[in-house]
Image (cartoon, rainbow, N blue to C red; front, side):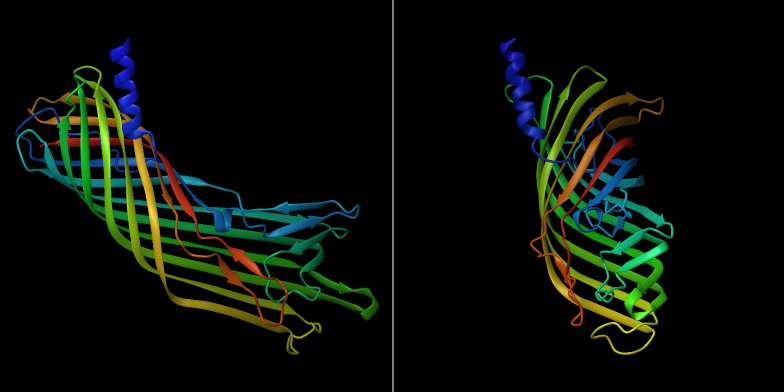
Length: 352
């Protein structure tokens, strides 16, 4: 019993610290003489972005004074990971692996009110003098999209535990490159009404926001595997990276309302654009995975492995939030930069 507790504690320490990675690496193969291996790993994942997911894009007010805030809905979708590796020795104690992962998701949210309803535009940099309040019949909607892709070139060293039977550890290091894109389109339609001025004009506001991040840097980590029997094993790994690269964002807004709007120039159409062309981006990344694996020999004397598990990556950039404010307006908007990727995967590896 004491031996079992020590073994479990050691494995827990080895791979339970951080959020899991898409690679799903479970250690060296048990067979010999198959230097090449490749894998395909479909996964179902979600991109969580604190900047957009927690952004209140509109509020709905009832005649009774009740106000409800609305945020974009989170969505998950299918992604994939592809890997190609080569073992430097017959026992697969050292190898080199190239891995690529891709995930893109979309989400949307819309609301509508009748003639006695009111929608408050929480994003506009132009509609700060009354048109942020659009009266019914009115509608508001937001569509957000994310795209994530990363490539890793890693070398792994596998070695058995000196204290526990059927336990194997690994160390790995290499280079990681990541590109992340995000953005949204928001639309507001209704009527701008000022009763004492006799204003009753249609109001249409369209907003487009986009941001792109790219970084490359070193990645190091460690993993562990506990072979339960000849076929099944459990394990995982944790890793840390420092990515250095560039970042840019853009905000474009067009407001159409035929009314006098405070400090804005006269005219039925107004526009606002704010662009950050290039900015240094430095982001620590914490990642890892937990998985269960099964190894099988096939008739051709080759070897296959099937893994299933969970994974995640946490990007923790040093950047302050994006800040937007038109000089004529009084609505300062902040969009934070922290995001993460979580997934459930199944991985098929073929050794040949």
